[in-house]
Length: 333
Image (tube, rainbow, N blue to C red):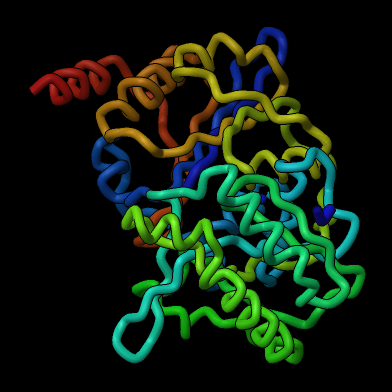
């Protein structure tokens, strides 16, 4: 055996004073949401840097403003293991590479994830092979693997979800140390090709984990003290950033109503994953939070949206009585 981080609301409350709340949503188109809430559809774009567009808003919430690819692996490692990585860290996640004409297409395994037993067997196979020199291997979940090294290689990588059409050629590592790492990745791919768990998955018509994707590398970022006294999240990126900023994250409440009951703090952050229908999002979260804003239980409500059309930030304004009546009538039509 070998041994071996849109979508975010935050809030602020102090005794006798209403809270401030910012909601960051990912995988969402901002324009329909603005129309749903009766907001100005001309939303300002948040400056981003490809290919980590989807991840920069989360880092920005904790003060990251560098014009660099963010060290995402260090953040998610802190979430997964409860402590920041002691050295250079990179994600090395299992994926499936499929032939697509003369090229390869990356297929995520989220739809048919590895079982813990399959993941452990594959992890042991590659981590014990001693192919990548000078690294330690760590598996957090079946689909989140890491390598750590005391020497930081000169590499630029791409997230697996940033490849246009999943084209592998558009996301290969680059930089002075890329050829050496690409050779190692090729060797690991050969090890995975005929691994028993993959053969068993193929027999069940499931995608094999026949490659590892290197991405998010870097050293632990230096963040200032957290601007939030409490953080609610179930996402590894926000959870890791929170830990790096000195705050232990908590589970997400079930709804906006329960969130309002928990706002007895000076400042809080809620990381809200968009994994439900638009109506459910509105009814469970946006409607009670907007009522709280109208009733002055919230001092301000801001939305940070990350989606395929880009990133946007806008304010939700407190409505007068007539606006609330008209909006309620429109919602019930």
